[in-house]
Image (cartoon, rainbow, N blue to C red; front, side, top):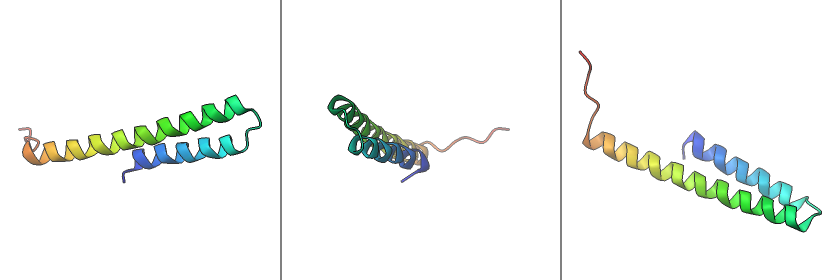
Length: 65
């Protein structure tokens, strides 16, 4: 997993931690939703990086002259 995806997952963990310590139910639910969104973003980052790597194997960067 790359650094950007790991950073997103860390944010998700932070949101889950905040949700566990929230006394307000609506705030807790917001934090849980944010955590879910951070996890989704991490998955998208991973997918984009795999696609980019696959594309670069097919179309290597041309060297500038």
